[in-house]
Image (cartoon, rainbow, N blue to C red; front, side):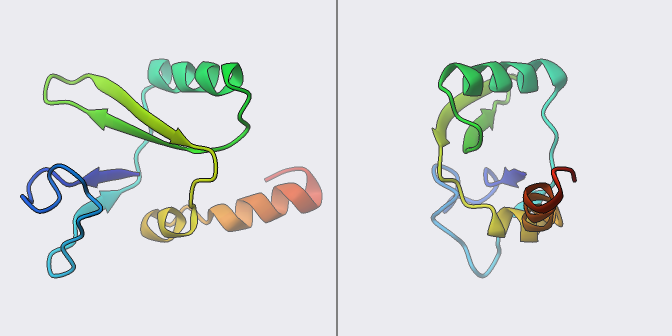
Length: 98
């Protein structure tokens, strides 16, 4: 998910300084293949099967990795972007496929 937090002074440094009157725009987002591959390699190297990663896309069109949370939350992400992640996870656990 992409969070457009830079146009609000309140959320510019940290999007968690929520502006409930004018929430940040959030949209589904797919990383470019080369970045996604680097993320997969990193996750394998640190032996994590899942996690939430924070990445910044700069004005100079570069990606900067900030952190990985191995116990990342998925409910608000799934809700905001209509990913239905909980359904995909339960299907995978029950049937071994999505």
